[in-house]
Image (cartoon, rainbow, N blue to C red; front, side):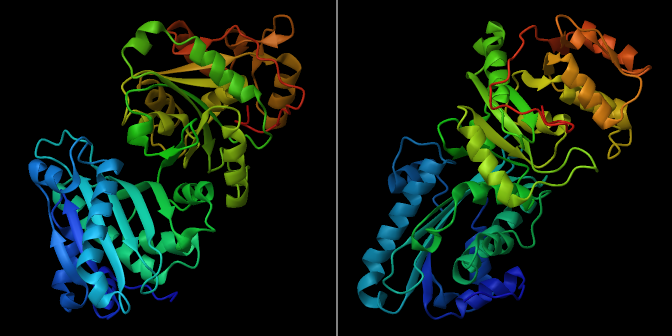
Length: 455
């Protein structure tokens, strides 16, 4: 039954305990038994909890769920889910199967260690039926724990687990309603959900791309990543130790030009950088938020089709909440120490240099410092002079000049209005801004949009 009433974590856990039809097991590894604890302490736990277990020791975990996988991984979680579900049905199906909506909740968590040196994240899963004897449904999600202490991270996992169980019982009418309940009493400062996998009849009409876009648009995640293999993956797996080429924009006028920017930049990556990484990865970076106050936010209904269209060009796609390059690089730097190369056209470069960065106390200088202090290079591709002239006129910028070669304007031929021109020359001389000499020719169906950041 769908509900519009917002309940606290205590009330949600108690309402499930008092539902005579809902019964299941809990298996939690790492960060304590924070989800089971809620149901055990609110009262009426015998009505819901068949078993709770914590296979904290690695040898015990291997004995129960098999060896050969990392302990905090999707593979380990899947093994836990299959094992606990099979055991639950073997023990209770005959006696309670016709009257009970069974569930198995599992998680494997890496909360903050004593030294504070680990990646704080976890995998959480739930298998459940909507009616006694019905087909099972699976929810598998990945969460990044953003609290600064182990205790706070444990608390966040507990809230998320209760929300998941409650949403499975009361919020399956729509993806939006499901996510709202899933994230209640949490925020991006505490926890991010950057991956969701759903199976079963309860979710057969839900679109997985749209669901992941909702994670960003709804502020449940900073970013989600769709890999070239057409698989969504958590950022800590997709970006881990990769040499990244990121092509930022909104891509409202789809053009294969952007794919060419990624391809040519990947080809020019220094060999020494590739040797020190786990390979390269090129991603379109689609910003959900507008670049300027004059631009309108992209509607949700437009973002998911854009993601699919961009992915068809042969590269991965990262849907990112913020349009700022320094935010994208800070996010990527959580997971890789390899240099990040932004493949951009001149219009994006101009936006970087003329943005006032009003959200930062240090405004323009702080914005540029944050970007280039993160092992970042901007690889800038030339732009036809007539298109640049039209674009500059459309934005109303004053004092910019340029030199052209054979009708093309390269990065070294661009001259911002002073005093920015002095800083720009410094960035060029220090090779933080790299001028690509390759002229990427637009395809016949390409269109150049006269909007900041579209190139």
